Length: 196
Image 1 (spheres, one colour):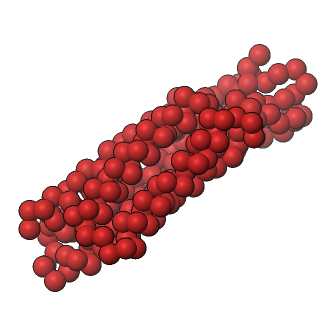
Image 2 (spheres, rainbow, N blue to C red; image 1 turned 135 degrees about the vertical axis):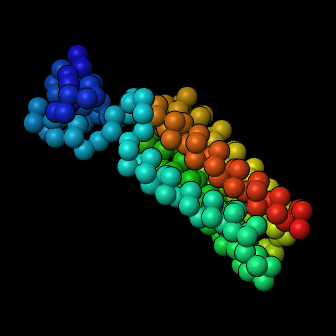
Image 3 (cartoon, rainbow, N blue to C red; image 1 turned 90 degrees about the vertical axis):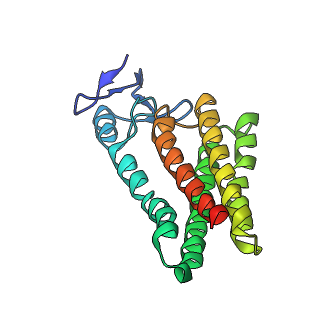
């Protein structure tokens, strides 16, 4: 029977024997005091809304995308290439970061879970695409849409991870607006390359 968290906001899933369910397959054996303490530290896996800190950090991470995409249009011609390179470099870093999140989500699953193994394998694709976009002298007219497709694919992987029970229920609510702004920023940057 669920019990209320210490702050009364989110219920905890508690079983006989003081086991705290943190996710579909993660169980901690705890005393009543430890359950109360853990509820103050963790955001519930099945919460409908993302944690406020994750939202704030996610939106802060959009600043280089938005400023880079707008900067391409307003900076002098001599700086444009530098701004494009910085935007692509940041996109590659974030693709690696997002791939690592999927790696971590898959690692929490049972070792025999075939869907999690597929997720683990797919988690290396975004960093490789980011690396390809910045390392081989690829023209920005190709590197930008490659990153754009990679971020779109990542969102599909986010939704898939939730359906498989690997990611928290709130994860798409965090990722959807972030992905939308990232993709619009990359589209704006790509338009600057095509139109100038």
